[in-house]
Structure formats: C-alpha cells, structure tokens
Length: 315
Image (cartoon, rainbow, N blue to C red; front, side, top):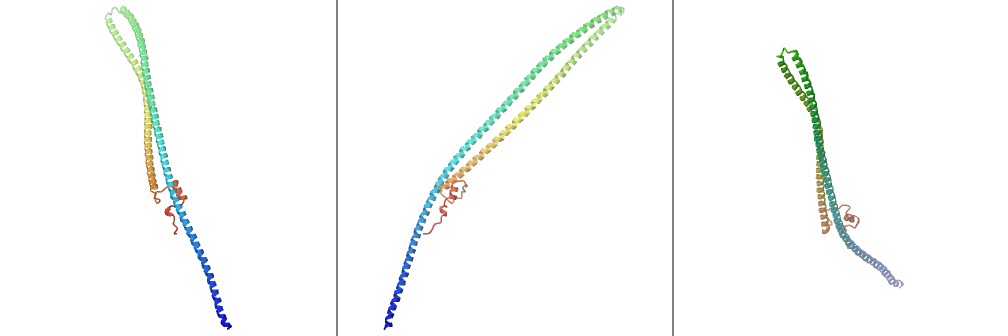
C-alpha cells in the first residue's frame, strides 16, 4: 500500500520540477526576447538617427556646395575684373611708354637732323666766307704784285729806253757815216719790245698758274673736309635708320604681345563661362578640371564627400 501511494506523489513532484524548469526557460526566453526587442528598437532608433544625420549632412553639403559655388563665382568675377583692370593698366602703360619713346626718339632725330643741317649750313657759309675772303686777299695780293711788276717794268723800260737813247745817240755820233744802221736799230728795238712783252705775258701766266695751283690745293683740302663731313652725315643717317628699324621691330613685338594677352584673356573668359555654367547647372560629375588653388577644389578635398559618393545605409 505504501508503494502504491508513493508513485503518484513522485509523478507530481516530477511534473512540478518540469513545470518549474519550463517556467524558468520561459522567463529566460522572455528576457532574451525583451532584450532582442530592446536591441532592435535601439538599432532602429540608431538607424533613424544615422539616416537623419546623413540627410542633414547631405543638406549641409549641398548648402556648402552652393555657398562655395557662389563664392567661386564671386571670386572668379573679382579675379576677372582685376585681370581686366591690370591688363588695361598694363596696356595703357605700355602704349604710353611706347608713344613717349617714339616721341623722344623722333625729337632726338629731328634735333640731330636740325643740328647737322645747321652745322653743315654754318660750315658751308663759313667756307664760302673764307673762300670769298681768300679770293679777295688773293686778288689784292695779285693786284699789288701786278702793280709792283708794272712799276718795276716801267722803271726798267724807262731805264732801258734812256740807256738805249744814250746808246743810240752815242752810236749815231759814232756811226754818223752809217745812217742805214738806224733802221736796223729800230727793227732791233721793235724786236726787243716784242720780246719784253712776251716775257711779261709769260710772267703773268706763271703767276696765274701758281695762284691756280694754290687755289686747287686749298679747294682739294676743302673738298676732303666736305667729303669727311658727308661720310659722317651718312653714318649718322644709317645709325638713325637702324634705330628706326629697331623701334619698328619693338612695335611689332609689342603688338604681338598685345595679341597674345588678348587671346589669353579670351581663353580665361571662356574658361570662366564654362565654370559658371557648370556651377549653375549643378553638375558634380563635370569633366572640367579645377585648379588646386580654387576654393571648390579645397572644399571638396577637405570637406565631406559628394552626394553621389555617400553610401546609403539600408533601413
């Protein structure tokens, strides 16, 4: 009887232990489920928070991109205005400097030509005056010498005539019987006078030839001086021609430099228009290369990545 009574009691104890273990496991499962739910809720909130942060970062990035675009546009506009102002100032300065240099060289050239012309005219006038004075001196000297020769000749002629008259008288007295000799003496006298005239004419010719030789020597010296002056003038004219040619070459080089600056300005304007168009259209995948010094390039290298590159986190 005792054993039969104990068996149901043991079964009840086993059931109680089973129920207790089941309850323990149920509690453990409930706690684990609650932890999982809490973790899921925490992860969901964290994901939503991250999504909101991502959206906020995207909005901040778009605002920063727009701000940098406006800033770059303003800086490009300011840079273009500064370049235009610098280009205009440099062009005006170069043109003014070139114009002043041309005016200086023209004035110097004109002054040199005027000085050369004045000195040449003064030299010619001085040479003419010297020539006139020399001719007057030579003419006076010539007249004086001719007068002296005429006086000497007259004295010699008079003395010869007196001697001849004395000789004629003495001969006439001595040769009275020879009256026919008087005609011979007259003929001799005529011959003597003719010889004297020829000698006088030859002396005049010799004197004139000597004067002509002296004049030719003086004229040759003056001609050499004039030739030297003409060579100096030609050398100065050649030098002025070389300077004029150099100025023409510098003017051509300046025009070429102006054309290059104009082309560079047009190229910068086209690049600026392309950048402005890319910024206005908001195309982030534009193939336009920005310089490392531009504000956009610095902002993109140091700031957050672009919207196209931000990886979205699945909810």
